[in-house]
Length: 549
Image 1 (cartoon, one colour):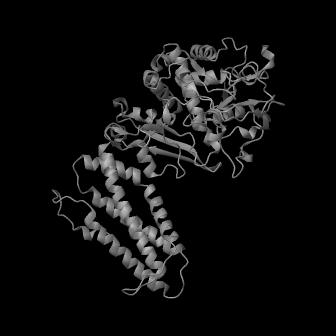
Image 2 (cartoon, one colour; image 1 turned 60 degrees about the vertical axis):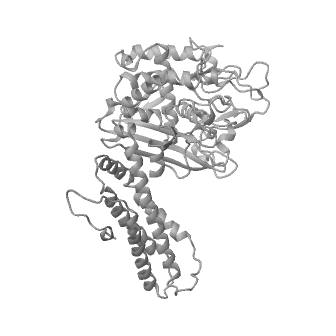
Image 3 (cartoon, one colour; image 1 turned 30 degrees about the vertical axis):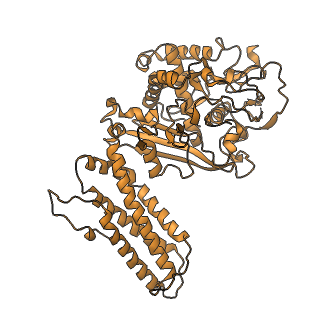
């Protein structure tokens, strides 16, 4: 087709804003700079919920370009940036079946519906594009949804600049993983759906160092993805393959190990005055890719896996409604294993256990994703955990962390029950012996437990690594220190609940005193359950009942 009929080729048109310098770069220039150029501090026009999808897209493009050319990350870093830019452009054009760019496979606007545009699949010959078509604004280019009817959030932008349209397409198409029988529109609107997770390493707070790390991780896992997951095909730019929305799905065996996911059939309309305002889309019940690997496991370096004991296979752990609290983070970093079976840490993070990262400063792990409920956005969750010096080593030998975590959680669970009992006494007052206590509202007790866990969440992960180090060193008194910390926070959560809970004036202070006494007794009763060392070399053993209350 004539070059003039399509517009905004993302490979060559400088669309993506970066800092410092307030520059805009074409996609291939951006990839080359991340590999060999100066540091890119940020992408100022990238929304928080788009970051994980955009980063996953960049890493897959970079890995595909290097693998096709038989080039390692180390070799790429020794190339001139201009030469690498040209090599990446030629490789990605060929990967999309558009070697000279004349078809417009990387163009945001592609008027011919029988020809692909960037992340916009073509129709098969002989089909009628007008059948089942729906129209909408560019607010559709978002994984954020409203409260009802599965409408996109109005404030996500009904008009888009070319850069915003490109970022929106990447978010929309990579925002669903292939984890079920329907991986198109139904996946984002189904009740209880978990958004595509992103769990990745962060190296020295640097985008360039992190990008090189992640591309290397995908290249190192290329053979495993090919052999174990059977992704050994030649379809990398999935959007360039015709999609019959009424026909069968594409076999997963045809996919390239670094394939770009595509989940929705959408086409942008012609831009007006430099902005995109409308689009067309075709809802379908048919998945784009036939699920070959159960549980959506396709070798994504940013996906953590859990073991589904009922079905007997690994599955992607999506973003949960509770977000990334300390319990979830520990499960993702140190999954429990039984009889050799268990979850898997995201490869981007797991690779940090390599000796080249031991003792390296400023290593962290980023967790982010969207959770959904009944077709609406439950919340976008993000957490960045800075790893201590022992963090990379612990990823390779997690048993001390798992053991410490189990004992620490036992202490937390016991104190949760203690504070709930004290809150019940606070609400009902004293009861005489033999008298059945009246029923009370359980919500204040649950609120106190939530407040306690919010306090613990601020310190738990740092304490866990420190306690695991002490346990590994043979110190058996660490659990006493942890119990004392939890007790202090239990009292803080209890007093906070008293302050915000409306209590009747009648005998108010008497109830508070009795409830405090009950909490003190409950905490004291729990101390024998804490394992302690029978002897201490450096100091006399302190009776457990003398721990701070």
